[in-house]
Length: 292
Length: 260
Image (tube, rainbow over all chains, first blue to last red):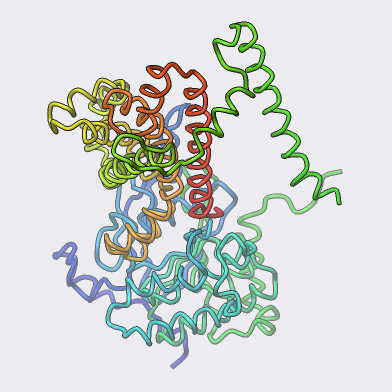
């Protein structure tokens, strides 16, 4: 059985069973799934109504890793915000873990674009408070262990007593990642999670992300916003390319059928990889050279 | 070397310059009024006299220190009670738009009322003048702390609130780990303003209520006793104590502030 098969989407028959029973909040079936239905998000601005994303529908299945990619201002963060619950849809809805998204919640771990650490709490405390609130079944010692493991994973254990204000942008981002990982959510939402990291740390974090995904039997759904084509291909099952805003829509969804586990070094020589890379590049970039 | 000049010598020089201007102005006023307002040096003589036995506490004569302490005591009680009302109420108003809309007009109407107007009301309620002056302080202490606390809570960034929601913080955890730490600097700004007002109000209150305290000293021993110098001595003491209170609260405020 190949690794890609283990994350095959649920059979259509199972979906059919639930066609007649819309929204069963207690149902285990929706856990890990994200369903975006006719989602439009508009903002009122002094210049009038600005539509960020227009009538987007997308199904993301449990265990999938999906990236939203596109130019700045294409609404990918807005789309992510609608899944995390920080942005309210104007029309349409997002169903995550079987429930309509009404606000942020611990069933969806979020790595915020601006890190969102609490500035008065130490690095350690920032993660501990999140673990303490969400992992109620754990003993105090287990919680402490969990915080320690996650801080060591992002290589910040020796900085645990510092306040966020004393950290660099990349370090803050790693704290934010450790915090989202620590609460072990069914759905992990990453808004440009590795943007502020140097290439080496970034590469490391990619592997840590996949390691975490593997430990969870590849059942965690991971959605990320990124600018980075290589990152998207290395990590994802599908790459959602967005049109330029305003009123952004999905331009194309590119499947990445590369076998897992993927090797960072070897994958770049893979023919399939290069095809996908070229395809994404063509979708994102109109001009490849300067006209003299 | 340059650092010492900037951090120690310069502030001292500025202080000396400011005080010199004050003393110079005072001397001129004194000369213009033909010593109706005593000169700084005459006041200094009275100052030393007043401080001969500051903590004397007989039945009929009380030292300036004793009076100062009794004023401070009243300010302390009034300020504490006022803050204990204002902080929780401020947290409530800041976190609920509805409560804010309901209470805001009430606050806006009561806040500008002169402290002195509350005194007879307190007297009618408590039938005791020292208690009435404490009542007056409580009322006047409320507003800055109440307004600043509610402003602090109302201005918690959406980001911080989202953290609380995204990581499932309980209400208790939200209050102790997000709401209070964020609003503490604002609360202390309010407390600093409140203690300043309390200290201003107590003198007026004690002038009305009689009995002990600095206000009584100004009125009875100063004005009725015909010693303008004593009034000036009291003004200097009130000013210095007020400055010290302000410095204490500024230090506390710095302590609870965080780097964003």
